[in-house]
Image 1 (tube, one colour):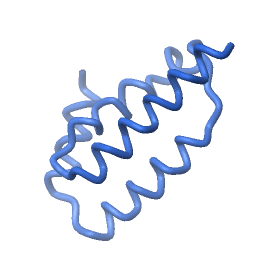
Image 2 (image 1 turned 180 degrees about the horizontal axis):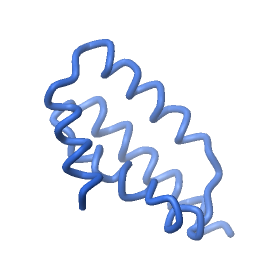
Image 3 (image 1 turned 180 degrees about the vertical axis):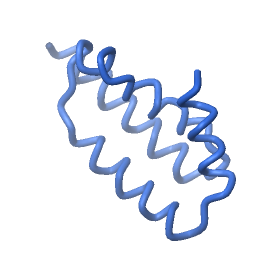
Length: 77
């Protein structure tokens, strides 16, 4: 829950440079092959899901794409 608040606070105050960095990071995360164990241990899934509720439509859609890609990774293992 704390991760979601932090991500929302970040995006609320983020400028164009930060949003560009976030989009780049989300694109890179989408390419990462994960397991359920990794997501549970790191909390990365919760953090990314928090960004899927961002006010920025681009960031929210990119975060949703990461979650979808990670779900497919887990289903394939």
